[in-house]
Every structure is written in C-alpha cells, then in structure tokens.
Image (cartoon, rainbow over all chains, first blue to last red; front, side):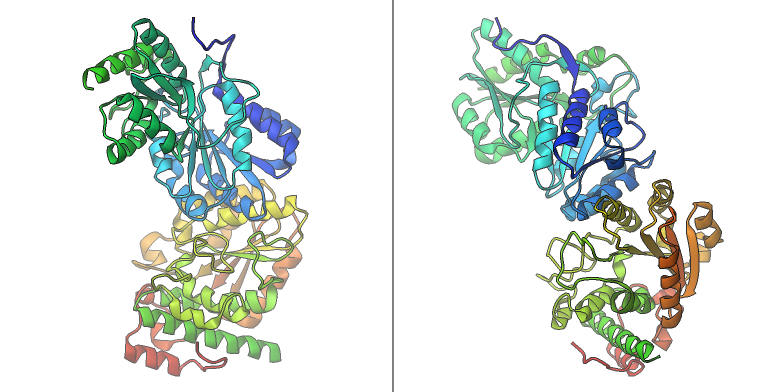
Amino acid sequence: MSKYTYTEKKDTRSGFGAGLAELGKINNDVVALCADLTGSLKMNEFQKNHPDRFFQAGIAEANMMGVAAGLTIGGKIPFAGTFAGFATGRVYDQIRQAIAYSNKNVKIAASHAGITLGEDGATHQILEDIGLMKMLPNMTVVVPCDYNQTKAATIAIAEHKGPVYLRFGRPAVPNFTDPNQKFEIGKAELLYEGSDVTILATGHLVWKAIEACDILLQKGIKAEVFNIHTIKPFDKETVLKSIKKTKAMVCAEEHMLNGGLTDTAAQMAALNFPIPIEAVAINDTFGESGTPDQLMEKYGLTTNNIVQAVEKVLKRK
Amino acid sequence: MENIQKLEKIVSQVRRDLLRMIHAKKSGHPGGSLGVTDLLVCLYFEIMDHNKDFKMDGKNEDIFFLSIGHTSAAWYSVLARSGYFPVKELASFRAIDSRLQGHPATAEGLPGVRIASGSLGQGLSNACGAALAKKLNNDKKFVYCLLGDGEIQEGQVWEAALFAQARKIDNLIAFIDYNGQQIDGTIEDVMNLKNLRQKWEAFNWIVLECNGNNMQELISTIKKAQELSGKEQPIMILSKTEMGHGVDFMTGSHKWHGVPPSDEQLENALSQLEETLGDY
C-alpha cells in the first residue's frame, strides 16, 4: 500500500487557472496577459472576473513579454501566459533584456511543456525550456507536480519579488498533494525517506517516482524520493545531505538531459560529492506526434524506466 | 525666445558632454546621440513633469523610455544635467564598476533608467506596459518613448504598434528619430521604410511630424500631441533629424554611428559647441 493516494487526475494548467483566479480576488496588483491561448491556459475565470486587469496580447509573444516588463514599473504583478515553447525560445531576448537583466517582477506562465503536449508534435513540445530559463541570472524556475501544487505555486510566486518561470502541462495527472499546502520556493520536498538511493523528480515525473519507489520497496530497495518543484534556486543543502547518505542518485524529468534537473543536480554532485548518477530524461532528440502515454513510453519516461535506472545506479555504487 | 535660448545652451553642453564621454573611452555612438540631443533636452527640461528624486514606479510623473539604447551618452548627460545624478559621474561612462553602462541598464541602479535597452525593438512594448499601468493606477501623466528609424525594422515594434491601438493606449507619445541612416548605410539602401506616416496611420496611430533638430518645432509638436491624447489612439511623432547634428564633419553620415572621434576630431567638434554649463 502506497503512502500516497489520489482520487482524481487533473491537469496542472487548470491548477494554474485556479491559482490565478484566486490571486485575482486577493491581490489587486496582479494582472494577466495571454497570447491568444486563454482557454488552453485556463485563464478565462480571471479574464471574466477582472476584464480591466486582463490584456489580450494576440499572437505576438515578444511584445507580450515587453508589455509585462513595462507593467511592473507601475507596481503591477503581471502573469504572462502562453505555451512553454513560445514563452521561452521564441522570446528569449525579450526575457533576457527586459525581464531577467532588468530584474522585473514578471511571472512567465508556461503551459503545455514537454512531450505530454502530445499529438501536436515536436514544433510545440519544448524540452529545452528549463535550461533556457535557469541560465538567466535573477530567474527563478518552478515546476510543480500536480493540480494542487500548481495552484499553490501560482499563488506563492506572486508574493516572490523577481522574475519567475512557472512550468506546467496539458495532460491530467494524479492529483495527490495537499490542497492546503504551503508552497515554499526553493525547497526540495521529501516524499520518502530511504538509505539506498536518492531519487529526484520534477513535474509529471514526480508521481512516477512515487510509483517506482513503491515497486523498489517490494524489492527491498529503500529509495529517498524528493519532489524538486524548484529547479532554481536548487535546494543544494537538502540534496547534498541525502546523497551523502545514499551515495547514488537518479534524476527524472520530462525535459532534455542537457539543461534540466539532471544537469543541475549532477553539476552540484560533481562539484561537491561525486557519486554514480543515472537519468530518466530526453537525450538530445526532438519529440513527435502521439498520445502522452505513448510518448512517455517511447521516450523512456515511465515508472519502469525509473526502477531500471535505480537498479543500474546501485550496481555502480 | 529667451526660453529657447536657454534650452539651446543645454543642448550645446550635452553635445560636448557626450563627445567627451565617447572620446575618453574611445567607445560609443556619437552620430545618433548628437541627433537626438535636442529632443531629449526638450523632454527633460521643457515638456516632462518629472521628479529628479528617482522612483522606479514613476507614479504621478511623466516617464521616458529610450528604446535606442546606443544613444545612452546623450541620455546620461541629460539625466545628469537634470539632477538625477552628479554631473561628474559622466566621466565613468563605459568604465569598469560604473553605473553608466555602455547601454542603459537597471542592475547598477542608475537613477533615471527604468529598464535595460540596447537589443533593439523592445522599448515600445515596455512603454505600452508602463502606460497600461498608469491607466490602472488612475495616473494621468504621460509615457514617452524614443525609437530609431532603423530600429523599426525589428518585428516586435509592429507587434507593439498593433497592441497599442488595439488596447487603446492613448497616454503614450512615441518618437521615431528619423535620420535615414543605420550602421550599414542609408535606410533606403539597407531596408527601405518607404512611407512611414502611412504605415503608422494604417496601424491606427495619430501621426505628427517635425524637425527634431529644431527646438521650437519640437515643443509645439509635442504640445499638439498632448492635446490629441486621450482619444483612444496612440501618438507617433516622426522626428526628422540629422545624424551627427551640431558637428559639421559628423553630420548626415552613417559613418559616425559607432566610431569615437580622435583627439584632433574632438578638438574640432568642441570648437563648434559652446561650453555653456561647464564641462564635467
């Protein structure tokens, strides 16, 4: 019997929409912009309740990021929403100069991240966005794991002063975290204590890491599992303490190996406490059309892939 | 007339400042900076209701965005001469550990600068956001923004042009420094813009034109723009200037876009510009 259960699956983008709607009620400085994807990002409720604080930007993401930066100057807290690919790669220079370098209080709301966007294919499935954003000084990178956590994170980042990249997705995934949780930016969240291996997971891979941990327990392997919902700033202290105990690590993410969670965690380990590391991530390839489940299977991002990675890393200890 | 003469004296000093700054570091952009000096002096010393005790939010004051960040030397001089920071600090332009970065930035906390610029095409979007924030704050002051004519080859400018009229941003007065030059040559040769008035009018902006190197025309045109504000349309002033204006051998050529003057050239240039407020 697992320590974690869920009653329903929900999409993280709806968690964002619910969080934004809540912010609309409690914080008059929060404003929102969207580049013609209001329904996809579930921003309709905010738009309906606060038409004066919602700005339709049209299919013009570069301008949207620049406008968001300008809005902060008058004390506003803008949430600029679009698909993750268009929220990062398409507008990198605008984010770099007007938001990150200028240290503006913009919240970039990036939906449909990763391959679980599904059938639309690789043009829309960005797998490099975490890397692009975490390389920017001043930028905080948050990747919540389910509906409840995405809602809590959305509310929390409005209180954080400075640019934030909030990454979430399209498919319905197990909604297992506490609906009343307090979201702490920069804190690795311990899900299971263990002594044999450390598993770091982020976003949609967190639930799969829990499932993998349950399977490993049946095999007599005690994994210490963390939800890394903040890639930057990375919770070095907590993870370092864990790997000093377990002396092996597996990282799991729906992102390119280059630039993602694995990249951050492995760099930290290599510089501080070198240990064997295995990764469950996309390795230098674009995605393709398919259902989310088919794609996660084909690109090696399943529960079983995490179990196998643990078994492999334990042999290298 | 007395007022115009006072403003012209400031213009002359700002031109001296920026040439000396660029010469000292053998680095910077004299041509465009000389061309926009009249407009910057007009805004900061005649038009804008602004507070030299700098506050980032700019609430209840007119605020300005310099989208063409490479003309920073002129802006820094105008800011210093307006009282935002000590005039002597102009000597630190483009130096290590300076607040006066090569292109304007906020990271070092230079008073007067609200956002970084330098990578072109972004300032109009920033100004639109600031103008929307003023509306939400029920702040009746203006947002001004200066673009370059070469700069509007960037696609983002036209995204902002559409956005501003669609969102009825009518507390924004933008300028294009229309000098007809860019780094590789004349605008006409590099990427012709054809009829700029028609382009902006087609984007549903109110368009005015003036000689941007004539103080009297600048004042009257901007005052007219203010009268035309509040009508659910953004306003564009095509400010026709000469690159390098004020220094005969630099005037009208793209060759002085990013080249510092030599010692002899500086001496020649300064001899054409009266020292009116004391060099830094």
